Amino acid sequence: MLEWSAAALSIAGVWLMTRRRLIGWPIGLTSVALYALVFAEARLYSDTLLQVVFGGFLVYGWMSWRHSAQADGRVSIVPLPARYVVRDLGIGVAFGLALGAGMHALTDAAIPWLDALLAALSLVAQWWQARRHVAAWWLWIFVDVIYIGVYLFKSLHVTAALYVVFIGLAMLGVRAWSASARHPGYR
Image (cartoon, rainbow, N blue to C red; front, side, top):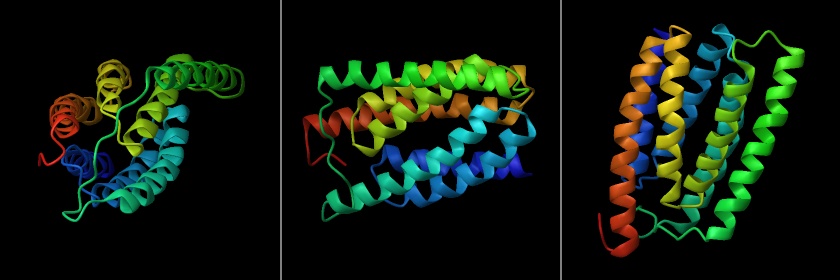
């Protein structure tokens, strides 16, 4: 029941993000709290830690979006300079390797290196989403494809199915956010 509840709230939160709706942030915050418990039980410690950090990013995103919301409650999309793509992905990979080394050495994590790298890249995607960059959705698609395999391996079938849905939602996000970036009045 916990995994199902977390999945349902996650779908709602991500869908609201694709629509650039502020309410997606507190719904996402609730879903990550539930998923922290799910992942701890599955011994996916990097994912558990990721949920805690996501909580902080979600609060940041919520506050950031509140300050940049338009009259209709939506936010405008801003371009991501190429130099920041390289910088942010480099930081993400370095953090993922460091986290993977720590999880490998200090815990009984099921798949410490991959779990840590995916967690770190997810943080980059969340950062970009909070900063309102279309590139966030492309990174989510990449990460989510790999996460599906991880969750199937760990017999988290509901969560694997959720990530299939996330890929569809991320594709929707790419389309909607790209249209909004080209035509600021797009809904």
